Length: 134
Image 1: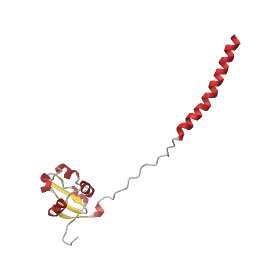
Image 2 (image 1 turned 90 degrees about the horizontal axis):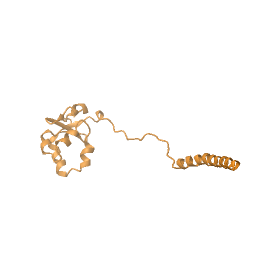
Image 3 (image 1 turned 60 degrees about the vertical axis):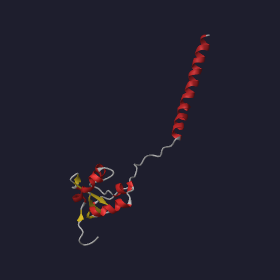
Image 4 (image 1 turned 90 degrees about the vertical axis):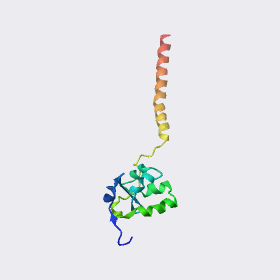
């Protein structure tokens, strides 16, 4: 970065977020793409949705041509102060108890250990009741 280059904060760049004034942050550089909105092959909405944040991933995920990368130079207005961009936090899923598929069969076994003797007892009582009447 040369000494004559302007350094912008994320807040400053984020203010340029409409059809009449659209700035993007890509790879630590700030670009005023307002004049390119109508010519962008992906449409102006794609560019407008990338304002107010580091759009590097959005830009790289599309796989822009070398020609597109060369065109960026004419829209360059300065650098971004990296300390004003929030650090990416790696997603960590919430802690969950380890799911044990054997728990289902354990529950069924315990249920059967209770129901089978109960069924035998009920059968024995019913058998005794009916044989006594006869």
